[in-house]
Amino acid sequence: MAWGVGKGGAGAAVSEAVSPGGMQNALDPGTDLVKRGKPRRNMDVTIRQKILVVDDVPTSAAVLESMLRQEWDVMTAFDGDAALRLASEPPVPDLILLDINMPGIDGREVCRRLKKSPVTKDIPIIFVTAMDSGDSEAHGLGLGAVDYIVKPVNAPIVRARVRNHIALRKALVELQSLATLDPLTSLFNRRKLQECLALEVSRAECYARPLSVILFDVDHFKAVNDTHGHAAGDAALMETGRWLRASVRASDVPGRWGGEEFLVVCPETPLDEAMQIAERLRQEYADLRMAPESRLTASFGVASHRAGLRVDDLLRNADDALYRAKNAGRNRVEREL
Ligand SMILES: [Mg+2]
Image 1 (cartoon, rainbow, N blue to C red):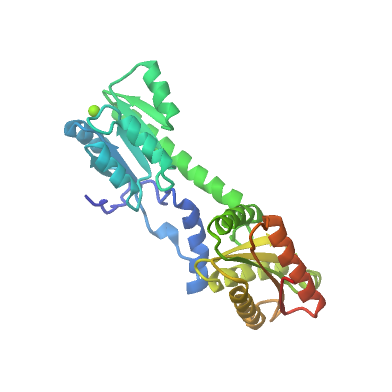
Image 2 (tube, helix red, strand yellow):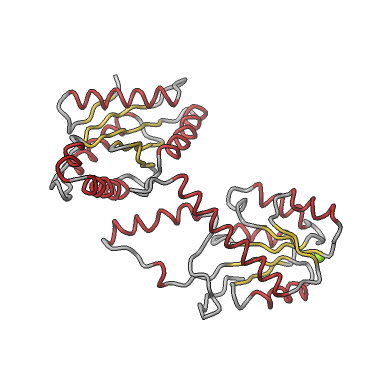
């Protein structure tokens, strides 16, 4: 069964999709900005949230569906297997109403498995069950469900709880993006880059795979701020961020390291290849026209992972190379020694 198409009438108050992939969604508008030159108007499109109802008794599932379908897109699964399959197929549901007592894989086990998978672990789950003992409720919440509704269900209460949990989930996704994105450029911030780099270093170490980093710093950036003011400096950094996101390969991870310094993590990339990428970026950046300075340049340092090297060592090597690029006259690329 496929998701229904949203009708987006007056009843559809929600105008923005929130999903466990929300982090990526948060990045998309910026990418769009670069490619089309103007922002996409998300608010023009009403996307209805999707709810998966799981109950082994079709009439019970139908009752819930009838309570929810005016406001949300609803699909149903009648056993644990179908629930797990539908929950992991993109676009994943925004919320799951899950019956506990089912033959085969019961609701508790479905919940356990959904919480284990990176694809489905962030989907809010509300248990819906005839069991009304306190123990059962505590156990369900202990498995990671956000709420618990006892049958027979009451339509206004079901709708209110679903609405609340969808709103909470949306707020959480927004908080996550605040914690991981640089507000000025919408690139990953230093904290997220460090997290990403730690993961890539352990992957490179574990599987003996190549990994490089490119660190670059905008040349004479202080002069932009001093001459044209901080608003102009911020505009130049935003432009740099837009350009960088559009210029790196899909597998590279760009971010703002701090100030006018940017880092690109390049998984599966040996030093020589990273040098070529850095040289391409240097040329592109020097050719980029941006206000208020019609041109800016940047200096680049490139370093690669070697067995036993720690994240800090890798970053220090890139930083040393960047320092030498600055000393050698700027607008150039240097590799680690
Ligand atoms: Mg049941």
